[in-house]
Image 1 (cartoon, rainbow, N blue to C red):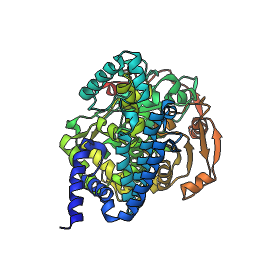
Image 2: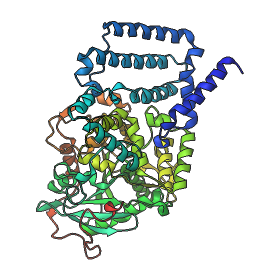
Image 3: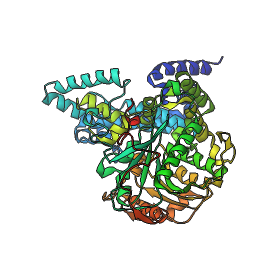
Image 4: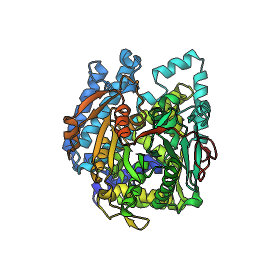
Length: 561
């Protein structure tokens, strides 16, 4: 074995010890991680000239920093260094600039790696995890933390230590994002009046009380994602999509998914789609309509897509239109998630969930948090531990932390669908013995995505709409994953983009798009009402003789731990 090879092996082994803190649920395949890390750490031995050049540049920048002549500054969008002390105090400024210089060094090394682009981006992500973690803003040297500790006589430090101990015991070591004591579902969240009118082992169907004298004849059926809970659509009266739809004359029904336990491990994709269909048939019976308009958000949109394809195969005309929100039907290979979705990772994830029977929602939440660690991990580290503050009382964050589980079979099939692009190819995926062909889904589609969404990137949401056989209108909101959906009118910062052309290239679509002020909800409701039938007198009561009201909204499944 050559000296270089021995050195490579030693570095990788040491690196594995260093990265042992990374949670396994991040989705990193061990082999891919090691190979990528090996390429980065071995670069001085494989391309010494290039690395020496970057090291010389780093040394030069460090000399400038020490001399006080460096012009290095963080990106304007980097909120970590917002405290004026990082810029005004010479010691803090040098610390910040040294950190930025080291970051720039590592990025330049990665730029020169002799690897393919996927490995390069994977290396960039892995290195950013470390550089973000070791930012001086995450230490007790943080100027705001030191100032507060002095002002409180050390009490902030004590509170921070107490907060850390709480999170170690109750949150798996992740900083708490929200003050959970400030909210209670059914009291100050999910308060729109309605009742459970159908229940099976997997779903409760909630019908909401009309808010206007006349409603559209065709009901509106909502399929939320089984990841987290349905009440993101009825968060507070001001942020409730459900209340907005009721005010516009829609008859609203929504599914509340049960939070599965290990004994439900055999529930597969067809179980979810079939249970949703049962609820849809109940909504049709209650409303007296022959078909309905449906909505699917995120993974709920994938379930809805499979359900509609099953209906098309059975020649059932039960759906008139389909609204998709922040839904991708395949995993983009150029995203962080896509880069990690190797066959080795998929097999590891299958074994992990098969062993437990379910995928715990906390594991998935941690995975998504580590995709944006500065916003979703380290900012709370600073707030909770260094500053000694309570986590914020924020309704969306409460919902985000109200985790649910996915059954092992459903999770496995969901991974296969998005990672292997099954739905893009008619017949490659079967559910309930039916080959799924989305081209047979010929109803009108309205699709929305968020331009800063890191979970379901908008370009892939756009491309996913090409899988269907019907007409499609696509809008792009100026928000991330949740805020793109929960976008009530009245926000002066809200804009959205529209383009009636159906172009293959999403960038070309955006280049020709029109910028619209306000919420996309107001455009969508016009589209939806045009497809919702005549106005009729609102029903005087909820349910029907066959589906009598049971528990009041938000139901019982949403309250199960």
